[in-house]
Length: 105
Image 1 (cartoon, rainbow, N blue to C red):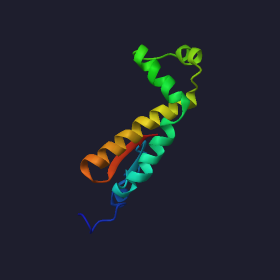
Image 2: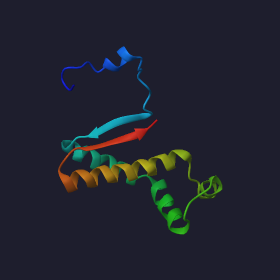
Image 3: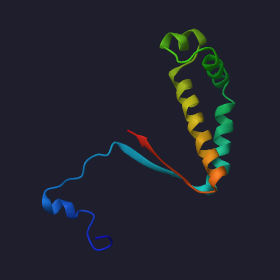
């Protein structure tokens, strides 16, 4: 029963906590300025334009596609983070609410 039972009540019956494999995040609606600032920081990296150009030419990529263009794994992480940042920004702007999401471990 909500509010009456302990969160650990299942343990009385042999249940145990399992790793969910996710991290829960919230980007508060009042963090929009911070989100937009970090988007600008990432967009200013020279590698972002290289990656955007690569994806205009290719439908995917292999390690050799990165190597010939001088793109590192870190560059790809920054590019992926940029996509997440844009989604967070767009959600907050569209809804005016905090953005809740999960990341898989």
